[in-house]
Length: 321
Image (cartoon, rainbow, N blue to C red; front, side, top):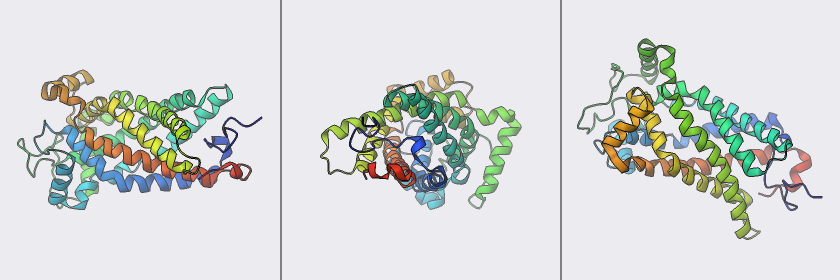
């Protein structure tokens, strides 16, 4: 009887117990860092679009990128990058949780989509618990001084940080962390934690579920000679598009809670509705869709490639690139 994971032909999903972890973990961290480094400017642009009042500063994604680059050059597109890069560590916990939960559920006979949905949610819960403090700091760094090159309401500086163009990124990061601690204590680093969970746990759960759904459906219609890795990358992008459209308002609320220091999610929703009305569902959506599609494609390309490289010898004959 053929292993269901192979579908009788090739290995559609490389499971946790099929890989050499000594290869998988270091290669996974390297891949994650490379993708984040390449796509981080999109995160900065998306965050600044979400935080601005209506179209006070930027008219859209391209306008934001051009204005940030003209005002600050490449460093402006990498604001908060080094503190945000701690996500590489949380990524190890994320993927370990994801694969571990899939493995446990697989022992109880759960199907691929159920395993992916549950594991994706659990992985995001673990990852967000680790990363939210760094996310709060990096988002403050992303928007600090935003609007100085064209905003009607002046430069954004919710913490009142003293800075200028000559200020080092390390000093700015230190000052942001110190001011958050002074004003709010340790709890300040978890501002927007609930909103982050509400935005990212369902996002992660749905993304993995949609990823496997789209992969299965695409494999039914593409010719046999089409690369399986390419099909997986396209499925990842489709999954990213779908979940981004569904969760966009929650992501805006999370960003505003963390940066504008609002008291609660209900306050953030009310302010957003007052400013944008139905446009709140589309605010920063283009940048987020581009970021999500590019990020999903790149992450799956790296993730599935590394799984193929790390697979144990007895499964190599079942691998299709």
